[in-house]
Image (cartoon, rainbow, N blue to C red):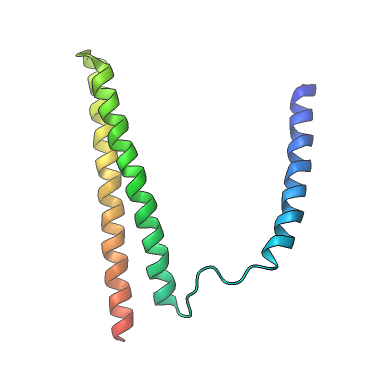
Length: 112
């Protein structure tokens, strides 16, 4: 119990320290997004999400390959690997679909 209280107290102190340091640092930073309108902001945000999502999907596929190798023919482990591969592919299709829909919306807004 005392250990949990110590962790809570320490985490609050660290949080307060970083909050005070970050508020001083962020006061001196200019606009990192560099966008003047919503369409540019959306394109920049989508670019970042697409890049990070691509890395996550790649790591997910590598992980599922590792699961297939480690299964060594065991039916339960193979099922786990197949499920992981299926959800990795579903996530990649959701990411791709969101990017396509958002790009279409940005294109439509820019034409208006």
